[in-house]
Length: 142
Image (cartoon, rainbow, N blue to C red; front, side, top):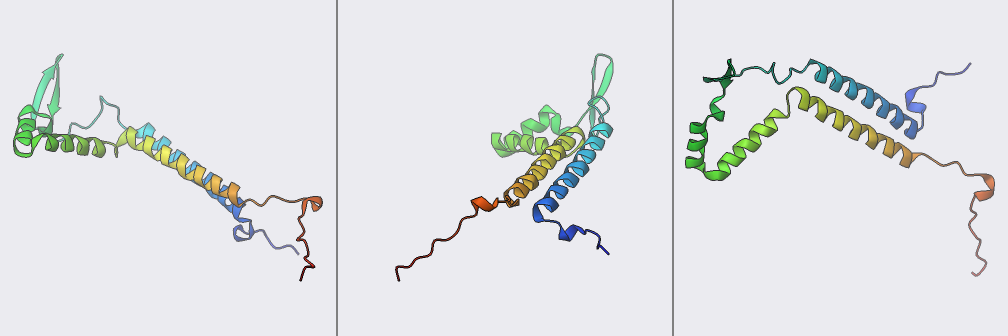
């Protein structure tokens, strides 16, 4: 009677290929769901805006950090570097929501899956034909 083939009995390169496929399917599926369900630019949450402005008959909320007085105060107390660092922090925080998050997950998925495939190829054993087997020369010099 044959025993069933278990995952742990497979060669390491085959296991890595299976892991790469699972990472690819799970990561791309997650990225697709996030991308499909993320709100568009016009549907974005208004946030905690404390002021409003009108443009073209539509009112928009203005976050406190987007006002000129906030930027001017920030530059007064912290200098131009404080303004730049605040803008960098806001940009970086914006990457972890909606469509940018889906794109980041897709890129990381491709990177991880590709790394597993690269490792699987480097671990794969190349079968040698009997005529290419190298024999160690014997030394009779001793």
